Length: 355
Image (cartoon, rainbow, N blue to C red; front, side, top):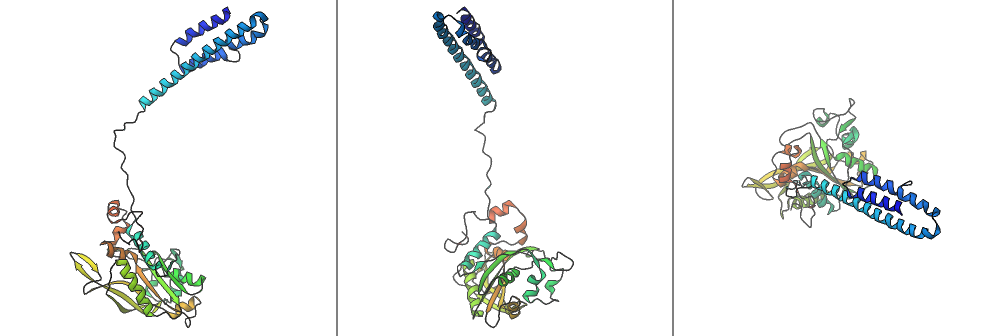
């Protein structure tokens, strides 16, 4: 018993001192490790006389429990002290202002594409897409464009090879060709997307957005084209009445061809669509040329149709009062914050196109 008391007294004194975690763990090892002092005492139990063995084991367990409780208490105290010290050094000043949160906006061009798609979907059109890099056949030849047509010149088209077989599409009409080559009529599609031409000023950009429409079926005529465009223009500009006129024009892929003007007037420096005696050109259209139908293996004696092309950027400028096309591509957040739209404000015919 004297050995047990000596061990207890010695380590009680040690544990009362100021210790770090490493020193406490060393004391724990000295006492309860494989060859520790307390562990060694347990090994002696078998050698002690039977009359004293029970009391020895009881006293040894009491000392073991007392020392273990004290060691665990010291470890908790040291760990808590270190945690509190760390928290004190790393505390967060909650009085500081929070970081500013910048909420993104939907670009007017993206909003306009969504609005156009929504309107045409209401009258049975589906959306088709195609690659920006096209071949010469889909972009020109299949669309009945003559070899000497000015659109084929390098000053108007971005060619990607010396043989002029690959190019950046100059319109989204190649999507119509791809659709008609892979499927059978009838067709009723729109094809929005990026297009490219060598041109740049306040109202033109080398990359711009266009949507083209195509409706091929039996017994389609100019009346269907006029009704379709009249519906679209009224819905897009959200007016009940629209003044619209068709001017004869020429496009190699349509015959007859026309350019469409709409009536407007100026009020307080703003363009008011649907009123007044002034005219504004907004799109080109016409009946699909029989040669185009032949090029995509569609019999022009059985099927006819109309096509139209609309500049998306121009529509966005007219509707939202934007006077410089180049601002679309400046990546100026201040401009986008002014003209952009809420990400959740998806345009639909029943909720409104430009809330």
